[in-house]
Length: 136
Image 1 (cartoon, rainbow, N blue to C red):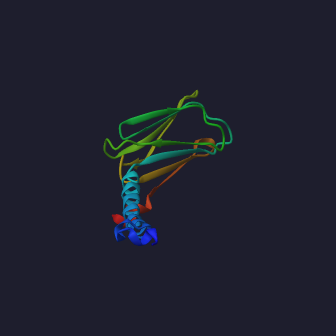
Image 2: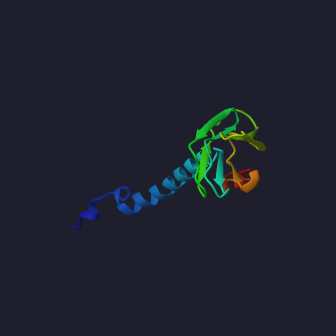
Image 3: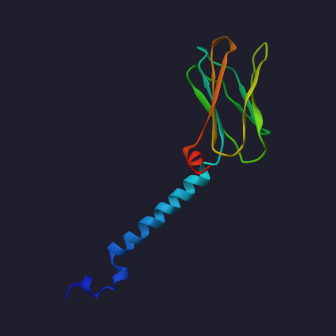
């Protein structure tokens, strides 16, 4: 007699994998949704030369990044604390350079992209993760 015929129906691979797939899909969707709630600030150096130490402040949090070469970027992931505040950038150079602009919430899946251009010009725009757009 064939061994498969002796197993109960719930122990067969077809039933097990068919039941496991929707559960795994739902779990992956929940994890992706929770992770998408974090906000971040991404700064690109498009100045044509290296930048000195860069300080990024937002939502009561701050982080200092090492010197940034031309065409490089840094990402500051915000913890879900604090309210909506403007983003502040500072460069450790002589004379000191600072910029304050685009506002951000520490949660909500917001990504603010900042591009530093020559002559101190700054371009900033924000986007929201597609999970948050779809569900809000």
